[in-house]
Image (cartoon, rainbow, N blue to C red; front, top):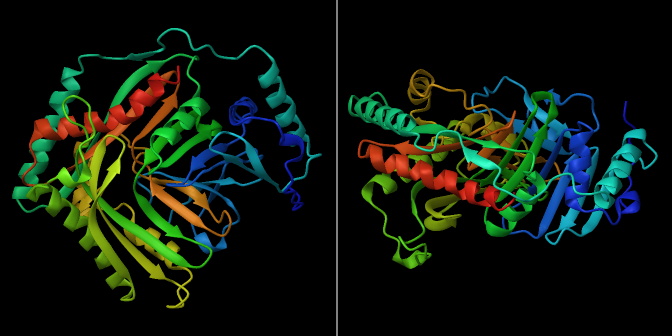
Length: 416
């Protein structure tokens, strides 16, 4: 049983860099998470010293500080993965250590092992090299994958025209091989600098022998120390770059009927969830055009003052109602979800689930796990999806998923 002693000085971790501590925690098999919230200048590193990752119900207001990871197929009576915040370190974006919260004490055996290994990582020859190209597409042509995806789009459009549902979000994967030269913490820092508007995270799950790196623009549930609840609808996508790679000004973006309707469906879904719990006291702002990496999206923000409506558990309630949102599943939820289970052909795992810190500084921020890649057994699996409506064109939907994969792919190539 871990003690409740808490230290907030920099102490034994002072002078250590993010990559040193991350590498040591990974080598020791500690579940850990790195993240940076949108438009902030702090990076946090959470390390759990437990032998196993905790499984629990996401009753957010009852949790101790930690980090949540959930699958896409999570149901509201199932447990989620919860990385206990035994050690939480705060860094500036230039990797300088600012604060340490250590609930187990500096003399704890595992803390001493972690620090000693981190110090060695900084003084010995680097564990990895950056020479050579160590990321190779498993199937460069991937023509079969393209044809399969386009066929599923055709099936989805046909189902929509038969009134089975109004919208469905189809996804696909893209596999690449990577060598031990890959430096995950370096990729995280690179991603954080390039995408300040996104929730950037890197999670190590040693029990599953996998890591997940992502940059998500979509907040699922947020609730701060003052009790302000937030969520958003994010749907409708187009490239933010010209053919020559230049950024298109936001005021030059024009949205078509297909994207506007796709976004409206997601916004209406959130309003319907509020209606289910008879909540009328919310503000709705948008839609507006927002940049996310190499893409533009339509976004509408929703906000509730839970203190004024005396509803402190709103985050937990809305989490169960919202997930999976129509931005990653479809409308209506049940028939579109069943279609995905029948037709998509693979397990999404944590892709389009939700991830994020819970009760860190009395605030919770859970994001839909989008723009993400899984590292497992020498393979990097990229995940991407596209919202399908009656007006969808298979070739264009394929290109949208390619654009989303490229967001991460380019960063990872720079981290080798």
